[in-house]
Length: 363
Ligand SMILES: *Cc1c(COP(=O)(O)O)cnc(C)c1O
Image (cartoon, rainbow, N blue to C red; front, side, top):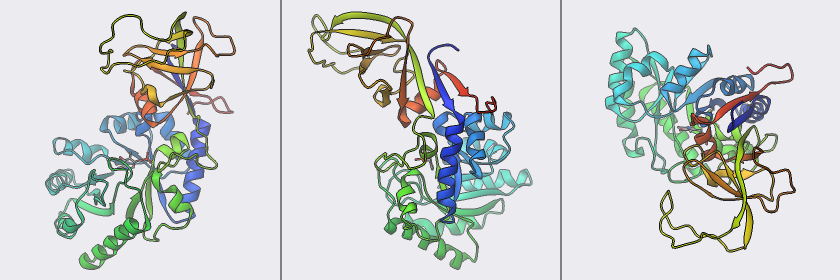
């Protein structure tokens, strides 16, 4: 195993998925497991499916292709709105896509017809987070046009919250989405299979029994991967937070001052660094950098270690208070938040190391 590497405990991911799926199932909510935080890792997708998710959601077609190449046989959902330039690929590879542009839907419908297919679509509604989605006052007109397209099956409507704007799900906005579903079904005499209300930010609401009954589908990534709900990043009961752990190697270890010596200007990634003067410290340089990971999202497993900063190829850690055992060649281990996980799992320079389960299998 080359260092740096990230260990993936597949049993923990499976267990996390099972906990979330059972919670959702008890409130009649079906779960799509979202693998994008793992860079579309096939072992992770399989672990989620073993844990009971009924489909896999991905933000990149490339990841869906990788999962299919790994013989994962499930329903694939594209979570980013389909780009006009890739409608053919979407029809060929994706079972359900999220959409908010009628021009794209028309193109999808045309290609679907050419391929003698019907493409499933979830129309996204923007309830205020200001990312993707049709603004509510235009929803009825949009759905009317979409429902008339012969190559399109309107599988449902959905919304995405807690992303760009940090707007959280509430009974108000979830009731709003549910009411749109009812209105659409009545007005166009169709049945919406999915009302896809939520992601990991809705777990508290679901557990409290506050989710409107009509919301019956969730797309869950972070809570399965990292065991946290996402409104306040609270640990979710019955899940593990350490399914992923990052290992990096100490390539230099020296006693040096805590403050730079000499006239200071901008650092490698801009900004003028500001270091507290605590005298001479033991500084470890790790062979991982800002091109591989979001340093702010790393937490050393040894709480006495302190991350001082990093450049593109290095992270520098104050190891003065470490209990010992740190030397050149040693590995330091970190837990990761979502931003750090996404970066590390998509970095070519970080090896991915699935841990075998009790039977010695990795997938
Ligand atoms: C990433 C994503 C999700 C998953 O969100 P989590 O907070 O990781 O559960 C759900 N829906 C869409 C549209 C997404 O892009």
